[in-house]
Amino acid sequence: MGYRCANIEAGLRIGTDGKYYPCCLAWTYPYKNDEGKFLKADTNTFQEALNSKSATDLKEALASGDKHTACKACWDAEEAGFESKRIRDTQRFDDHPEKSELVFLEVNLGNTCNLACRICGIHASTTWRKDYHKIFPELESWEVNDRVKEYGKAFIDESLIWYQLDEHISKVRILDLYGGEPMLMKKQWELLKMCVDRGYSSKQFVHFNTNGTIFNTQYADILKNFKEVRISFSADGVGKGFNYTRHPGNWDDVQLNIKNWLEYTKGLKNFSYEVTYTTSTLNILHCNEMAEWILDHNFSTNTTGAHIITLYVAFVFGPPHYYIKNIPFEAKQQIIEKVKEKAEKLKEHRAFKYHSYVYDECMKIAQTLETSEECDQEQFNKFWFDNDRLDRWRKENFQSVFPDLFSILSKYKPLFNYQKIV
Image (cartoon, rainbow, N blue to C red; front, top):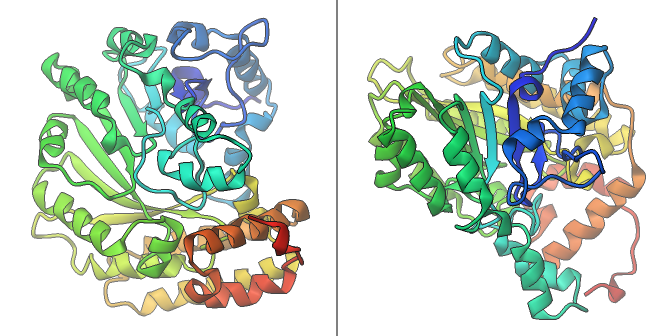
């Protein structure tokens, strides 16, 4: 018996590097042509990617029942016992009345971003330029700038992608927008306005994955015209935890922006909101704090017409040194116990009976660790190496922000000669 995935049947993702992929989780599997060359949005059409050898090979593998390695993130999720992107999106596709070869479109419109998150890099953030130059001090400034620009050049105004979007956007029913920071991508707002003007928006679902640093009423007014809008605020902690993982972001500012979005769209049923807690080795022990924040802001059953903001727990798969499965086995056991203990305490919150699902979201972390005995020690060592030097460069301190997690992980910290590190 084979497997199905709507993203492979009727979807396409465009990365910040312009390469085509099956979806955002299959980042290790860029589509290639018959000669093995990468297909890119500034030089190749959507149809070339959809009909490519890579896409065909992937479809055939799933149809024959093979668990293709490109889909590892979904296989891991399903093994841990919770709903994967494959299952979730395939259900949405099957329920959709209109089928085409491009129902799902995920677009990362370059790497323009105002934050330099710990789990990121120049591929998705221009603000990472300074730290990147420290990692490679032998590079000249112009060489660093060129490498940063490499991840945005597929989206310049004259790029083929805009002509392809103009041709295909009418077919798209589910549009996922990422960055960089998607709210900063001005060209995409022209695209969304075009969807409104041409009447496409009444049948389209738009999803933003934003860092929460931007609130703009003009943007909200454009989005009001879409059939459905979901805004996911990427926040990997609250207070100091957010400021540390989403450097140089400020949690107080983001909280205010979230409240402004909710208030401005109050009563509009086509809007929904969530906080995406992207779990990594950095914040694996503190999802309960985000769950508590969610509960604190959802006191009632929403009879006033105000929006409820929900919690969604996701996982970092790359870079691999932040992937939680690469934590040593003994540390995993301690973390599992702590996660379960903290999740149980959520039940004492006065709003828990209205939003008990937050318990299940937090428990996804424990479930993922329980199905994992693997650990790439080299990647765990790299976690310490990279995170420690960022601490020094940014004058931040992992131990002071996450002391209980540090006390567990530091027992397995390797020794380095830091005198040779910039």
